[in-house]
Image 1 (tube, rainbow, N blue to C red):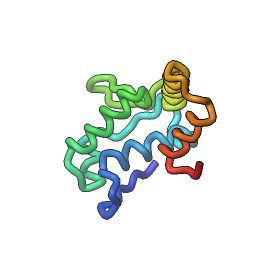
Image 2 (tube, rainbow, N blue to C red; image 1 turned 45 degrees about the vertical axis):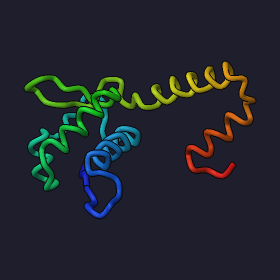
Image 3 (cartoon, rainbow, N blue to C red; image 1 turned 180 degrees about the horizontal axis):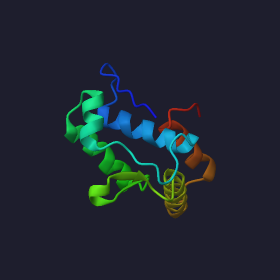
Length: 120
């Protein structure tokens, strides 16, 4: 897998890395147990500060996409793409909240479509 950071993008570099790793897991380019480059190595390869890459790795770890095993390094988590599970949990929480506020399901969907930038 080759990561590329576009310095002209409005998306911060740490987020570009995070998105690319998640996409690689989703497409199977990275599979559970695959070892990721060290923070220092990836920062060097991309011409970024190590803290930028470390921030990406922390976010990926928080999202349960990767796991860090101390000095052994960072690996794709055994659960693989945990983002789908997290989105399902967020969707259930949103639906529950909409119901508790008495929002019509159609209106709740319109709100989500707007938040995603999709036509109503």
